[in-house]
Image (cartoon, rainbow, N blue to C red; front, side, top):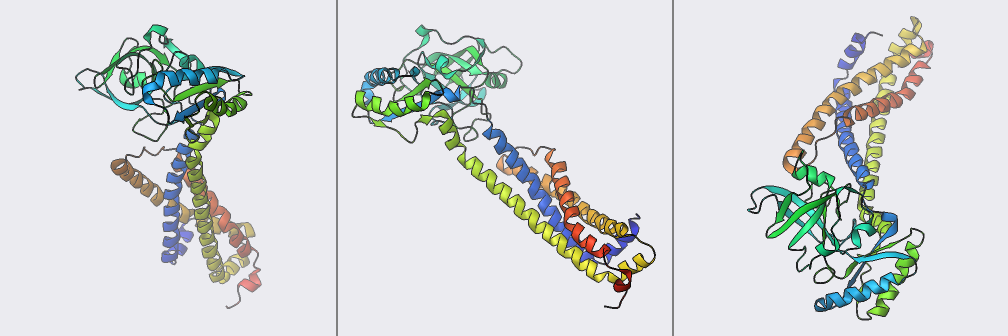
Length: 404
């Protein structure tokens, strides 16, 4: 089919064609960015935390005397370890999807000149590494004698086990074992590398990667109190967690079990990502609404043009044009209009992404979403124009050539 006659016909309807192309451009730009946002949220929902989530729970208490932290820890841990089915219990400042309590900017020199970024610190007692189920890639976990007192949010001078992603960020292409980093006066030396350990609030803070985490050993007591991990077999964990509050209240009647920050890790994950799932649903709704409005616009315009071209259609049918030729004419016409809109939409998408990167620190838009959006819009255009095209093809030549 020759395109020149179709382009000539479109020039007779410049305004309506331009409006549809503009609508397509806006839809295409919104689709690209919406698909990108949905993709980012879906990857976040599938985040690998690095711990044995199905076996872990986080227990938090408040209302105790900080001066008696060591005694509080001893009583709480004895109570938790006495629950049937509990495999391990230990003091820890937080867990993935728990409260965000210890993140700080690190430097790679004591003078603080070489910045390394903001990372999260997990501080836990001797049983914490094994109980969490974190995989060690190289090096070792802290020895029992390396668990020192915690008087601030982290120990003053301690060994550290960092994630592989963080090690590559801090010392690209170099072996991290034996390296040192600082947080003001606090000094750390790397003794091990973990495969994964997600920060407590992925995508919710200054950390640039969900795996920018480190584990440092701390002796329970001081500021390391009131927060505990509980490990049990997945089938026993719900019952053990339900008994934890009762056991703690029996051991320490004056403390308060923090319902808001406590929970089994699968529940904490579900709770943490609820806004992400809600936003994903909203974006899907916006996409569907845009596609529906665009499809209605294409159907309306095509139906209007069919009504205007009865005589032209009848003449073509009388000269031997088949029904499929009439249908193909409207499909090619729609394809050309949609293509003009897609080209403009791609340019608008790139421009929007550049602005978002420059002013709001957004991530570059993956190129894969451009062809995906184009294919969706092309398919939508062809489906929307199909019914009016079939109606045009079904008009008999004798009826179509009558004066209207």
